[in-house]
Image (cartoon, rainbow, N blue to C red; front, side):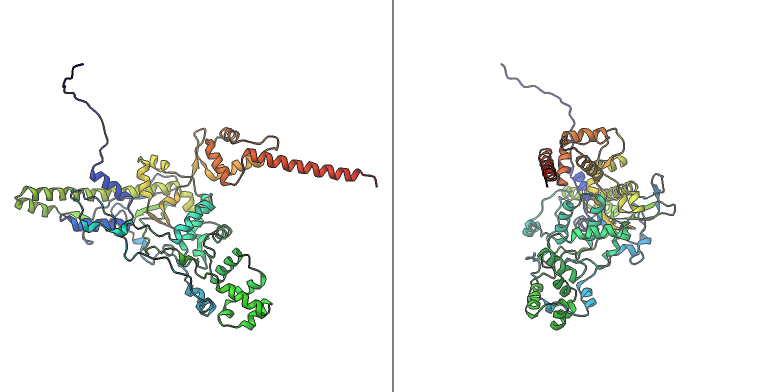
Length: 539
């Protein structure tokens, strides 16, 4: 076989991710605070970028979306900078834009006494914290060039501490499956302060979420069983009572002691002994138990840097009964490309290296301005579609939260699911029912077998439970049989999904259910035969 050389031409297609495209994708998932930090770094690095003057009129990056009942959303307020000036949402003008958080000082004030002397020592504060804040994320420079040694920061490799909010959110995802309950639970978790307390009025959660007071109380009862014991209490007395119930020590005498902590702070032992109905030895033991409890259960978790949550999007009722969606112009960085400066420099630059540097700087500055503009338009587009899909939640409350996934929004606005996922990360929406992260509005759904409207995951779980509850002991339904019956009723679901939902509801497998029901049936028959034999015995 002879070896020869030859020249061939081949045509192929490939996706090339340019540095500019990669940077534009990263900008989508940044929060408004991280975006501001990144833009500040670019302003220092690029001499052709400059901060736009607040007095100078700027072009709106996107039009505010507005739609009425049954109408498609369209452009409006295009003349306002940043897709809406946001004048209707000045600080202090809208009551629902603020959340009144209770403090321990307020709790102590209601008791008209200081309670620090009740406890022998305060619980340990959060574990060792970083000496300095972690360095901001370093991004690849568009114009090339390697980062220097000064960009290396050892603290960037230190694992982040688990905050109380993160710890509670993890337990929330396991405790509740219904979207409405999760929404209520997350709203309450957002109100918990660093000590683990909720405000006494729960931030008017029922009124803002459009839920009943009983629904909020039911969710709160579950939250108060979360770890650490005593968390999500509305007062110091309730915090101690939760911990005592966990220890199985909340008897009537202890309840009377917890309800009269003001007497304990005043050292009025005689009055406490009379109220509790115990002797001196018992009251001393009870006070000792109180001192061993943790009055600030949330303090043992790491404390994240406090950052003001600034919404990226505002949603307010429109004059036609619909909803008006607009960007928060305060979160949009205003940068311009200084073309005049570049024109003057291009006439004086003689070296090829200098000319290449300023050419790259101009290209990078132009790309940044375009990427910021596209980011703003994409956020507004996704937020408007979310409001349109979840119109029932904004109008009637959390009970009308529809099943929604990324694909539904992506298909409606003709974008990719990954783009929608990046847009909904770290973005917040201020509504008439509070401020929520965009991802809160996405709930699980099950596709319809006949191509109709999707089914809520909670409704499917309820259907599975009904099928299992109604099964006969002689005809136990397997997971495959349940799948067939669900598909016959128009629910397209996989067998592994049925098994996952069944295990989440703590329903045993078909084999175990058959054994349990046959055993129960055998016990019933044996009891009936025994009663019959006793009734037939001669007197």
